[in-house]
Length: 220
Ligand SMILES: *[C@@H]1O[C@H](CO)[C@@H](O)[C@H](O)[C@H]1NC(C)=O
Ligand SMILES: *[C@@H]1O[C@H](CO)[C@@H](O)[C@H](O)[C@H]1NC(C)=O
Ligand SMILES: *[C@@H]1O[C@H](CO)[C@@H](O)[C@H](O)[C@H]1NC(C)=O
Ligand SMILES: *[C@@H]1O[C@H](CO)[C@@H](O)[C@H](O)[C@H]1NC(C)=O
Image (cartoon, rainbow, N blue to C red; front, side, top):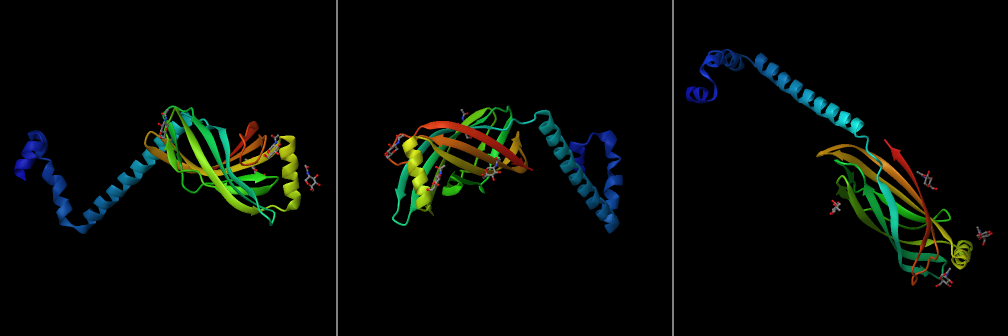
């Protein structure tokens, strides 16, 4: 022990050492003191890191990522005899993170669905992934479902297909946390509505996206 101290601490400070070491082995009171000190240090550290993170967050106010539906593919679309629709649609969304040094961590518990005239056609999940700063990622979502539609709604769909204008609503709810450097901040729930108009909703067709409108809502 003496040897260790000689190696680590320069001689003038060595005389002080016993004073700090003596009480530790003396009573349990000093143990509690030491424990409290450690706790204080820990709490202070956590507080300090949080404050720094929030200051950085406030300084570099993150831009909400830009989303754009790039591809809309109908892999299967069958109208069954009971007027229900069995559909599988894959949607490719371009997510652009313009922020420098700010990433987004997409959580697992996401939901997405495609609605036609307020009726859910199919549903799916977004992949969980982390998007770094200054990055563009293509997110492919596969939505499936067999839903009852009814004759009236099917007639509407046939009419819309004939007219070449099918209004759809894609609803996405995704838990996303902002990541600064390596620090993930609190998770927020991002709600994205995309009002899409496609020219046709059938299987063997090159489907064109005629218009798209995006609405965001962020729940803290
Ligand atoms: C964007 O991030 C994704 C996911 O981390 C990565 O796979 C991809 O290579 C990145 N793209 C660019 C252009 O940096
Ligand atoms: C949808 O269909 C119903 C009944 O078939 C019809 O009354 C209604 O006008 C249609 N809606 C539109 C917007 O075409
Ligand atoms: C949409 O597809 C259906 C079935 O393939 C077809 O009858 C209809 O003409 C198409 N509509 C347009 C606008 O291309
Ligand atoms: C998205 O659409 C749903 C259903 O129409 C609506 O309840 C919700 O408020 C919309 N959310 C946003 C962010 O526009």
